[in-house]
Amino acid sequence: MQYGYHQIGHRVPRYLAEEFGIDPMSPTAAEDYIRLAKLEPVPVPTKQQASYPGDVITWYVDPKRTQAFKLIITAGASDKLLPRKDRKVPIYVTNLLKEDNDMENWEQVYPVDFMEETKEAMASSDERARVLSILMELVTGAVAANKTDKVTTLGWYFNEAHGENKKIRKELEQVEKWQTIYDSCNMPTLDCDSGYNIIEVGYMPEHYYLAISLNGSWAASALTEYLKVPRGEAI
Image 1 (cartoon, rainbow, N blue to C red):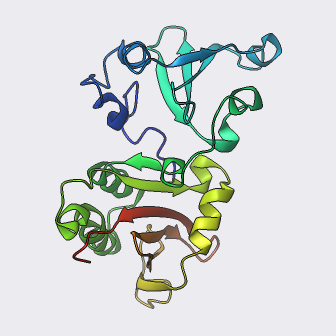
Image 2 (cartoon, rainbow, N blue to C red):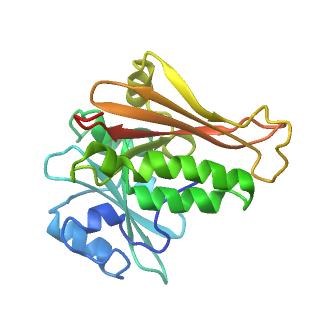
């Protein structure tokens, strides 16, 4: 289940574009964000550049040296700017970065975008309706549950999209107990293209975590992605 940008056609992720009031679909969005965020270019070694056939790759880091960005320039298409972490960042860029805090390791996503991508990833069925209903309560209800306007994005981690992240794995291991909210793995009447789906929740003092395994089948296990949701005082 690949999410990529979370917003098809966007030149920069929407949560980045909104920092400076940029239209994320504008042909100049990447250039505008680089300028307004004062990103610093990192020269790509000649040997490394040769490994990107058809594309021109440029790396940038933010002024605080905590985040790396990959600019992709493809002939006949608008530039794209992608934030990158850990194993997706070459060593010559990583050497310029400072140690990240835990939340910065998680890709920031909007609840509504996550829900839309999840809907598109599942075949239309009664099973999908059940899963989406539960996720709607857990994901898009995060703002209301916290009774604060500070929860605008959620942390998202999916090994298939982000690669192995030892910091996040260690963080998830600190969750003492995961509780299953939904599990259709053993439903005898389940007969749909979506396969089985599992949703679990784990609690920590400042956040709760969702482990979401979708589209499993008897021939292949469901892949698991994780959401990190800030907890409000009322929870």
